[in-house]
Length: 206
Ligand SMILES: [Zn+2]
Image (cartoon, rainbow, N blue to C red; front, side, top):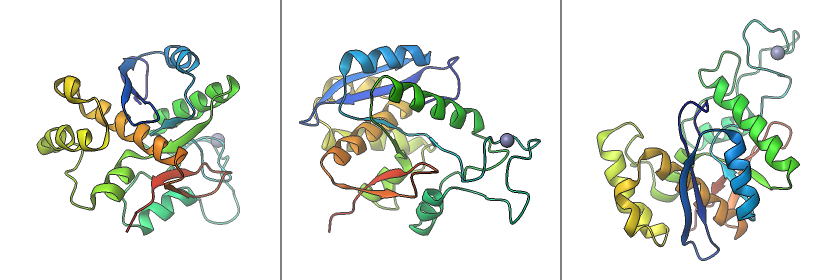
């Protein structure tokens, strides 16, 4: 998802056989909500932080809403757990460079829940590392898109006809949807705590 409705956000849907059922973009939250209403998915997986560290009510540096006592809290427990697993991520904290994206995610989660959807937070980079190891090309590298166009059809059925139209955002949307499907199949781990928002990652199957 993008931080603003000025840029298209990617959304992907998978059916229970892991066949791609939906691959498109949206601008306004309302479009996604209508899509969710008409598709009635079992689960919506959003690959964006969907909660704030305990004690914070916003991410503004000028606001004093973090605890005056004790050290300033940086990052959510889920993010600390990701870091311990060797998976790099943005720590949700005051002045975060992705704060507008976090606000949008939190609001969208609330709106989807109000209309009855079950929403989980995923993190595409964590999904990539858990499924493919540490050697996945970084998202902004030139190799990245070619790599995922090659790998995703091994996970998701029915992509052969739309490989050329896949960009890095739709690849991430597919990875989020895939993680959501794994969650429905109880093949995930849930990091962090409910108060701050948990992150669902694929369980490593040995
Ligand atoms: Zn505040």
